[in-house]
Image (cartoon, each protein chain N blue to C red):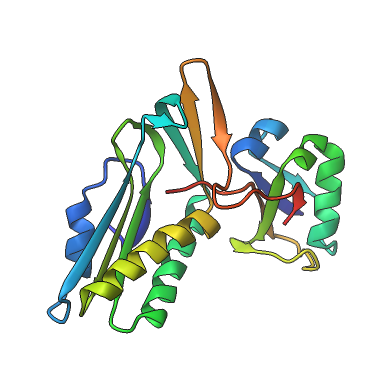
Length: 77
Length: 146
């Protein structure tokens, strides 16, 4: 299983801060496609995905136990 | 305390200045970012910051490494506060020490620019009549995966 965590505006859109999905072996881009089908609101903004606390490429392949964070545009400072 | 950290209570900037001060440092720049009441004519009541804490602390440390590689002889400490912050509260502190002042100024500005690019922290502005998560203020991204 893969753990998904959502933040800020994306968390408001999902209504949950985390969930589990069975997507080991899929790519980051495939996970994004899945997420935008489940949460079409995601397409109204931008997001980066981080795997195990590091920004990921769309082609990166997910492994069991990975934690994927959905990161909307940051606004610290 | 740590040199690169997310905190939930009031920031004392002097602690971070003390952390980077060394005998070889002739300059310390200390930047504090504060909660601003007025933005483009809209009055903010207070701010709420959220972070992906473990990754945010890693990214703050990465910025410190970038600086120490780019400007030889520098030492960096950065803290960002999360939770509810009131007007004028310190949201972020950046301390940079270096042998000479020019580098300390440049490296300090580099740090805040990088924070706004890569550190997973989000700011929600709460107004009298609503609230909104603020996105990346450096660029307007297209929708979708970036």
